[in-house]
Image (cartoon, rainbow, N blue to C red; front, side, top):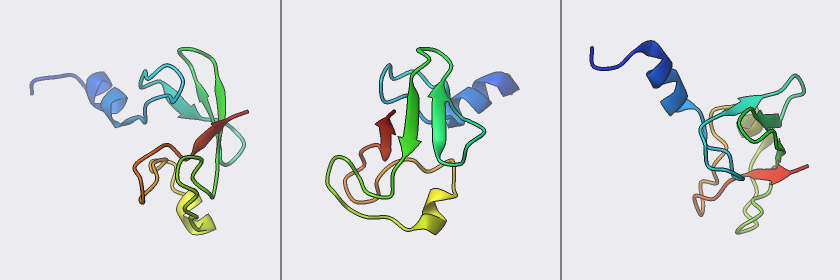
Length: 79
């Protein structure tokens, strides 16, 4: 094994839209995230802030997928 488990878990986390670090974590409220590195808070939107494409509520329940399938941008908006 080339890396430890901590490295693998960090790589799977989505990057923070503000600072770019992979420290984005879901909060207690569904659809809300917080970066534990820069402490910014984000909300998962059903419409992409970059291209305006809409997503379904069922997709929003998947916390691992916060990127737009249409343009590849982030579906997170700062709150």
